[in-house]
Image (cartoon, rainbow, N blue to C red; front, side, top):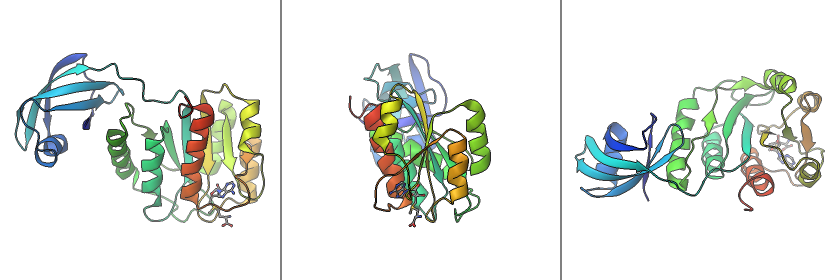
Length: 242
Ligand code: SAM
């Protein structure tokens, strides 16, 4: 079922007036007519079904009511803390992590991350909304502005957060970590840039209470590692192994 994202909270039912991108998508891309049905997810993450009352390429009026869909959100809050990557790699990480049910994405500035700042957060939010529509999710992952790794870790340390930093040179296995803490509800997962973490950064993470985890002997590209660990941890802690 096609799905659109509505930037404001909706009532349990009512009449919806759409314009801009949403009207264009329904009228010109999907060529909807009167009576056509589609899903709507509002910014509180609730999902609704809607039926077109009137439509033209600039505005759509539809009747909607709340859906009690099978929960499509994982029961663990996984937050991917990804060092900034070059080019469009972050776009792919945002898209795939959203499909895999990530709860939030924190872009990080690290010693070796080649972009040392970013103006792409609004772009990534749009990619996440598109991935929500495609995957049938009912909640858009939050995406924050990029922050320096040390200040992020000091926040985590004071907050007593559960976290894993993925490091290819050494570390525990994911399974060892899983066995020591199965019932956590929020987990921060930290993946480095193309050039990897320096020892000092890994040590900072360890001092902040993060587990250092290796994924074995092969060196994965950062985007491969980010997507893989999101899937693995959704399997272990979340709803992929329901
Ligand atoms: N230092 C690496 C090298 O020598 O090619 C580059 C880092 S790797 C391309 C990018 C990131 O993916 C790393 O910082 C780490 O977070 C994660 N990663 C890749 N392979 C990994 C592995 N085998 N175990 C744990 N993390 C890994």
